[in-house]
Length: 99
Image (cartoon, rainbow, N blue to C red; front, side):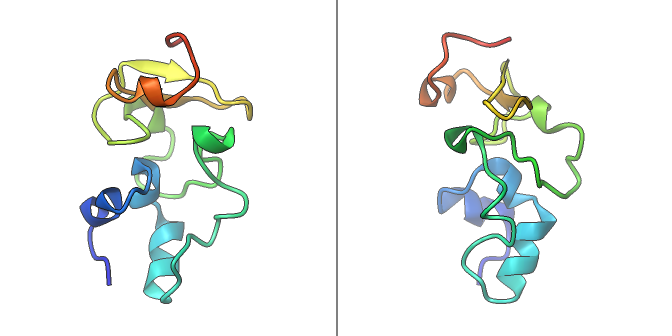
């Protein structure tokens, strides 16, 4: 069983997922996906982690959605929210910079 956020990052989960209470509740029950997997998600799904629940509420934009390092740019997915992204991971998104 996974026990730390770093382990989830290594498995490819986005940083907000690794520190989200909904993800850990699902893992504690033995599930392989987050309990909000149908409604939540990051910029690759056009979302800004709308169902995130955890210690970073209100400050997700300060961290890169992919790795958790300090964000250098903000991007706005189609859902209208904002997410942070570092210089290394901006190339994952189809944008020409930040806000």
